Amino acid sequence: QVQLVESGGGLVQPGGILRLSCAASGSIFSINAMGWFRQAPGKQRELVATITSGGSTNYADSVKGRFTISRDNAKNTVYLQMNSLKPEDTAVYYCNAYIIVTGLRVGYDYWGRGTQVTVSS
Image (cartoon, rainbow, N blue to C red; front, side, top):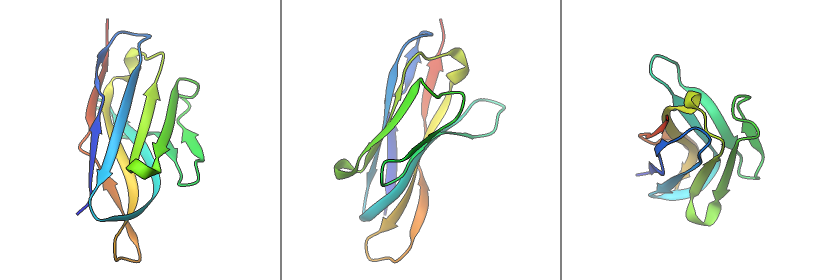
């Protein structure tokens, strides 16, 4: 079936940068919206950024101007460029995608297992 795998997380200092990647694989016919969510310890999972198949983007207020979401449809991959990282950005980042499986009329909402991002001195 379909699988999403995140990569690119790690430990960085405040003000640093990271680029997250999420590659979808499996019997994929098409991918509609894709996005990134994050969850810090003791907090609810929150939306970070989304991007439609047409390229329209949406960002949480806390990351506007610092993060950029993009996608490569040929590679079934979504990216999250994170600049000017702050300690408050520390969280597990999850990839999300609405994917239509080959042979089906409707799609499903898929999630990756997450990648840890830690911003600390």
